[in-house]
Length: 263
Image (tube, rainbow, N blue to C red):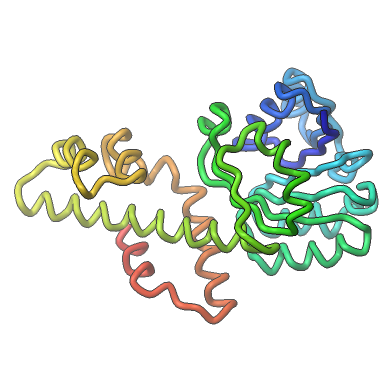
């Protein structure tokens, strides 16, 4: 049993909290609204009203908020690091700039706290199944300490190098994900030119050499538009992070940029 703090009990975070509690961990989670606090209590965890309070006595604090600014708010502008014990680990699930991870890592080091980025690929259904993919960046010791807890909802849990690399791998993953949606959209347009309906294409292509996880997900939704609508909020945010980070680091998305725009 590990003492875990959790910030961000929303669409992705609340299922994570439930899996942590089911695995027997002692969880203190942030619940700013009465509805969230009720959901947390119902999941068998302790609800607190300040982000910093999740760090009290915690061996591991997990952050699963929505934006880079929100991560900075809870990790750098609250008293979270002051409340966390020395020797504990702070893990960031949110898709953010690798430079933000590095800044948090440097600030946390002064408090004797290790930081890892634990970028995720998947959705609430993957969390419920215990099959969320996690890309971990950080020191081997911190990753080793956090991994048994993260396996409450993550499989595979992949250590991909230094702090920030979890985010870098996630950004490449998301760029390719968005580009594949764009390419499938163009393929559907090509099918229409050739007189093949989208439904027929999506029924057939997942069984051919063009098959991919994205293709299967789109086929399950029944159309490119239907799938894009379902993931638009998160996809738009993550693509913006990809483009901002690549520009910040002086990189170039190349052909991926064209395919992303096609989606």
